Length: 488
View 1 (cartoon, rainbow, N blue to C red):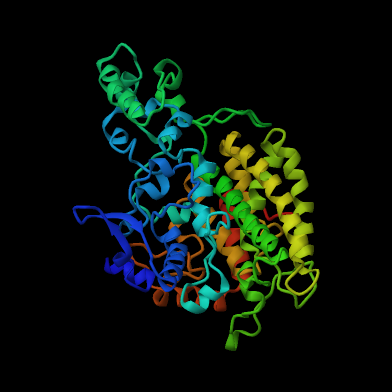
View 2: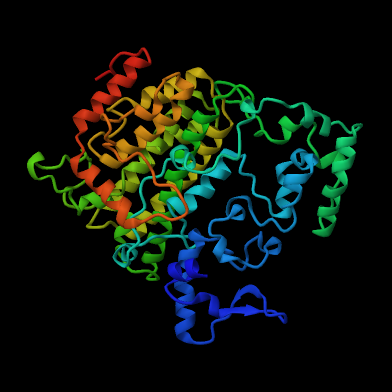
């Protein structure tokens, strides 16, 4: 209760209804205008900081139990409401044979699908206007730090590991037994699964709704691209995650820009919203003896804050990979994206803080194309050549805007994530300077995160950043990959 109240700023628990036995049922019932205002503000916080139902028409709402805010970002925040499936996931081996689209009928979220997982993560770590998740500039003044760039492999590395790519699961024997309709493991596990669906009033037909094998049930649908179809036991799972999540982060950012600009164009939201732009366009790092901070080379009018650069780094890397290796329509969409992004940039700088109506229209087109590219990226083949191609793109200063510290940080996080699949030893020492962490790549972990402790670390790193050092680090990675310098 104390933690909940600290986040809410008032005694939210006092407004929770109780049943006849005096137990909280999780439903908040504010009676006064002041309490209603406070609850709306608290919901904006708890949409990301707890497992709060997103909307009354949420398709998962029938599966939700009463909200227990003190759980924070619980298992159900990612995996979906577990009323109908929670015990099965741990007790019945047959549960792992149920097809993802069938599990969804019980409220289960298919986080093995890399695009589903990435979009889920990005909804909080980047933002989602549709779900009411948007850290606005006024929140900064209230004490919430600006959201940092988001690279999924770096962020999930801070979580207790409780999943493995299929290729890393060593023993399929017991899973194969559970998949054999003649085995006792299959027959013993089938009953609880069938009962769970019956209790949820969902028809369950094992012959149609169970996959032929554990691997098939937990793999992506195979969609062949230019470089072939995905192979769950041979593909480079980390490369796929970096590329797909990078596209999802850019997609989330563009959708956020477009949704808010659309509301502003209709007079439903104030304009401009400064959180949508590159912070350093106004807040220049102070460098004292180091001279003036470098600024990215932009093809936009000077003096007009542009959109953030950091989401472009991995989004454009994923687009380049789909252009080379994905099948249609991904390649067609990838070919359209550069021009569509340029149109969005022009709309955002046509006048100071941009034209919201034009930004909304441009963002809609970019989002549609990004969705096609991301779907192609999740299904295509990721072999050693794909990992190498991604790394060479990320070490090319022509592709990565090295004068932007947040963009450099994205590339560095991604290259650390790819290091194992690139056979680069000592990933944790990449982009380090002795004992220093020049890009503040180390992320805080634990149940509480102090703004006062971490934000100054990043601000200090940003102020001291030197692009020449970073380009030298990229050159070193290229040499270790056996590649020469990029073409001028």
